[in-house]
Length: 309
Image (cartoon, rainbow, N blue to C red; front, top):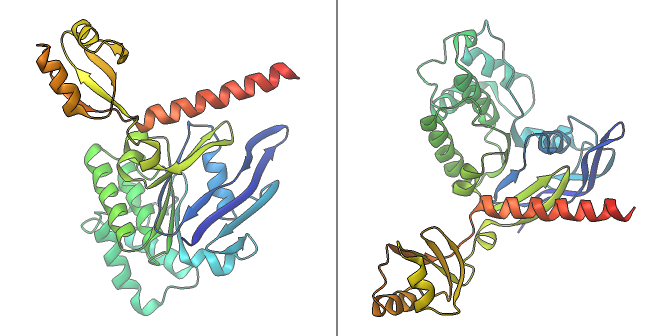
């Protein structure tokens, strides 16, 4: 698949601190790429380097097949971005802010400006308040307006840094559906976030940043694939252990993990032994479990290196 974002050995130092430490991103056309990490892990610094807003200390960035920031003038009109909190002129309306933004760069014809502004305000749920001064907007409404600005040029690539900040659950769900629909229409989405549950519902691929290092990068379906075991939920876990001697690998309250990836077979054995079963399902790691395991493994490697010095 065509590479949309590629970094090679990307590094950013602030004095003696390595905020980003040699990361190799690989984002492909059609991805919804979840860029995950705790606050302070280096996500926003990485995003700013991708867009040429911050120069890397070392390494390379390619966006849509072109070197950045050298090709920024030709590449950025094809990219929509929302980085941290969007900045607006508070005394102007949302519509006027979008009009100024559209007029400030190449790629947006003034002849289609009104129509495009109407369309993006409708997309982000601000059609009824577009003429209201932005100073009267809530935090969530300002976030929606920032997303509207990112969508004005019908971008090939959307780069979003915490786009659901300030939104209530309904607003988060609406933005999720909007981004998935844009992706279905052909837009590649690079989504930086610390909200694992949201990313798990959207992403096709994920990268995990921990203390400036990319500790994991793979397809979400691969990372959360069945482990080859079955999870049994029962009020009598001791009887499961007795009935399936040697096959039980873990017990946590009413949750019992059993070797074997055929729930029907496990169920038949337990029913035959008279063990009450509340539920059975193939064991799959959650994205949270995957991310925490990757972070722990990275921390262990750092600790080993530091002890060896």
